[in-house]
Image (cartoon, rainbow, N blue to C red; front, side, top):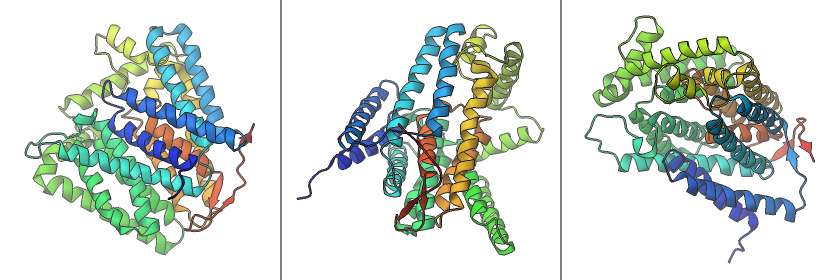
Length: 408
């Protein structure tokens, strides 16, 4: 009988933690279960560090994210509502502890790949859970059983992107049904940003893989056209999908191209951006305190208590220009390091996958707030780890790259 190792326990907890942030994060009262699993995961990771006398790894991501948390913490002192600012900073600190722990555990491609697979399985299980517990005879947006449908669509999109990578590089076509189920679930959520997310990811990955040479560029053009054609067919030629998401895409395009729309959610979010800009004009340097956009919007304008639905506006209103610059400095550095590391590797695609996810989030930040997202912080953490290893073949063999981490 195989002896259970400490790494086996950590991997077991890691899978169930990732699964829990899919199934429990957005369900009131159940996120405490996810936090309990996270606590056990952290404890066992640091047991592993101490027992193996490993040096503490502290990389660029952790350093800059700590500065961002410091800015958010300082904003508590002048926040309009200090209590909700304190609550948000607590959330960021807990996320940060998980990030530090993961950086000090995932130190090679084998562990990284396992984590990616855990994301794939978690997205698949979340999709199946939604489908099994939904009445498909009703034409409505599915996924509310797990929380906000847009948030659920986005996190399943992360899983679908990782699944696409496994199919593309490892030729594991058994994962094709998994990818199909997740994409169909994204369509059923009716989330426009989630649909754009997976489309942009695939197109960006294809572009980065085929950007050199005329033949490769032609290949990329064919892939992009095929993706857009299939999407168009699904949305506008299958009545069920058209009623759930096709109509929503039409109204979005009408708004983008200046024709206007009567859809309340689009007009409301556009208004929230406009008033957010007015708030920023009054306090562009410091903002009003982390998580305090909702206070201004609800008390000054008589709107409902909610966030800005735009990451740039949210952070500018909450933390001012410095908070925004520091947070997006993380994105820029990660992208720079990913592309630099990819030039040294034969398996470049894994770097392109993380670059695509980060770029897509930066674009979609115009319509969502994610600075406190467990899922995206997980992605950033994995991206920071992979920029410190160079994958030289498909058999998980690795070399150390020139990127350096700070050892303490």
